[in-house]
Image (cartoon, rainbow, N blue to C red):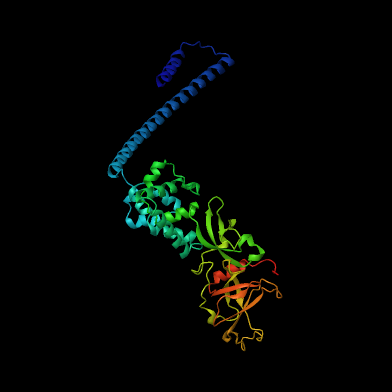
Length: 401
């Protein structure tokens, strides 16, 4: 381009002496001036563009070269890091304490998934100390010593059927075949893999008990508040029943023992709030031995056994200790707590109801009552504020007759 510019200037200078001496017309002079300006502008733009293109070309070449060097050094560093970092890192390479802390914070579903990874993790994930926390957190309020004893008997009866090996396989197949109540427990493996995964799981482990409860395959004894959907005849009472969990609705089914000639009663869709573990280890047909009669004062909260007749099982009924008829309720002069007669009041009934008030003897109290008013059994004093609050939350909306 520079050569082209020099050639044009030389050609114009060469033609100058040859041109005629007569002046050109005004339009010719203007045309010549325009041509000269055009060539000057063209030449200037060409030179500028030439230098600009060369400048950017050199700059881009330098950037490309530097990027090539950067990539090369980056690749070199990556190769060095790969060589320095082992390829078989896993969660088992963590310190023992760190791994234990992680497993303690996993929910039951994640523990089951982790148990299927490898033998080492399975041995850790099925340990009782991990599952005892989950058992207490979810089932502690409805599972008591009676239910635990029932589970032990259930495990022992399974061991007595067939050989130990066949018994474990049947137990395992039962757990595998059960539909796990949570969608996150549907492990995508076949039956053989599941058998291998849980073949070492003991029948009496806490994890086995937890899975049996969650699946609804194990029925356990507990007590139900306001049985038969809050029937008016059972308001503010608590009866023993055999319960099974329904994972689809997160509720329970209760089977109440027969009342004399009355058949077994079944109630469905019982929420968690109406359940509790039996507070005392007394079967429903046995009289509870009272050990708190001399400690009861007016205003104390109590539960007392009551049944319609002697063929029925006992239920626990909520009440309070009242004052004698001869006492005006003045705390400074009240001597009701030193009297042999103990007054019990059931304030959910109207004042003129025959169920509102009863008396028992502190000294030689056994079962007292008759076929018309029913039979009163053992008494337990309620000291726990949570229990008292539970009874108050179940209070009927209307006073009973």
